[in-house]
Image 1 (spheres, helix red, strand yellow):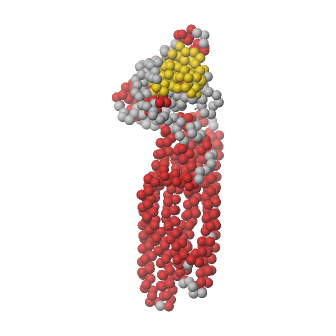
Image 2 (image 1 turned 90 degrees about the vertical axis):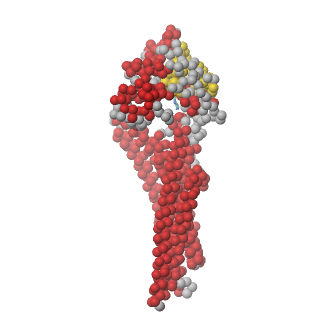
Length: 596
Ligand SMILES: Nc1ncnc2c1ncn2[C@@H]1O[C@H](COP(=O)(O)OP(=O)(O)OP(=O)(O)O)[C@@H](O)[C@H]1O
Ligand SMILES: [Mg+2]
């Protein structure tokens, strides 16, 4: 792994400009067209606002004030009223159009981010998932990305409509009275300074908040999965308390974030109050001196009042952008993780029907462990033979098996299939030739058929049924309400441990792969079923190179080679009869407990 995932919570911030450029390049640029059209409508929207503010001046000077001296002038109000109405109608319509366009764009962008993030997760290696809680990953795809959505819309509407409106109105203000405009502009640097400071604090809180939400999600997923244990140990109250603490953390951070972002309001209101007061005083003296007409002042105040709204939104925009960037940082951290297991340059695809597997001086250590777990391990598995790994718990049997489909890569040495280093093969080719039945069977929330034919694009129902029959699960499937079309529920909730095992055996049968890996495949079965399944497994092993890990020695007595492993090294190997004659650890294991 290029980067340990725990760092996601702690790493230093990336600069805003870098993040924004990256969001644009990777996710928003495909929607350039839509964004441009939306910007065009925003431009019209802004132009209408400015036109309205401008119209206030002649309406005031030429009609409302003039009418006091000459009542006949009242009729010229109609022209201005019509013009003002047009500005509002047009503004209403274009505003609808650009809002809908922006929603379409932002929803699509978010869907793209979610799909690409999930797609990326699928490529990451097992080592990554072992260090990650699934709740945290779900939170990344759902919450972080949702926070980014608001940012994407807000930023474009903000930079489009609000900036355009603001620029137009400020232009009008300068046109009406540039000196008066100076009073107003003098307050801007102060306002900007405060906005930026607030934004920085918000981003920090937002990142913390998203981390906290991820923690909450992983806690919840863990608890729901472990509900049986929780209830069995009467730990409900403890868990409620523990969860409440995290929920309260999230609440507190949300409140803190709101407190900071709402600080914008008092700051703005007070500033605006001073500015309006300044304009009034200055304006009154100017009108008295005959330099300014009342219409110009009204138009000026109108423009300023209208400008206040986009200004406020732009101030808030920074908050929203900072929140989104906090989330984007987390999303990109995930996206930047490179899978440790990848197809090497020039990786080949080969086809083979028989496999000779050779572990050659293989050593291995997990990232966080000190000292090698597997140490100079050499073993050949002849084609169409059955090899069994036995040995104490934690001796490295599963680890050795996991290296064959490259769930983990060897630290040193190599594993070869028919003389080809597995690292020179594509993972699709390698894994396509391996069927795996393990202790932790995973059943997908899908139909029985799809669970058995898992990973195949075109399902041959006859083959599925044949496999189910061989795995001794056909009759049970027929007894389900919809037979083969019955959905099995999340993690196969409708199935017993043994039934799950049989489904996974049927899955392996259907795959017809030359290499078969069985990691305690029969552990969930009772003695009676095990005998039944054993016959199936024996059939399954025919013509294949099989590697079995079994705790019940009864199931491996017929193996061609039994390898006793301790602390990652081979201590003894041979057939059952030979091993039982020598006075080694296998004999002890066999005599001590057939059922360890
Ligand atoms: N992903 C991992 N990260 C770090 N250490 C691991 C990981 N998986 C296993 N280990 C450690 O490596 C050692 C060997 O584990 P492994 O699963 O290979 O043992 P095993 O021989 O299959 O044991 P068992 O018979 O109990 O299944 C154990 O000490 C285990 O704690
Ligand atoms: Mg194991």
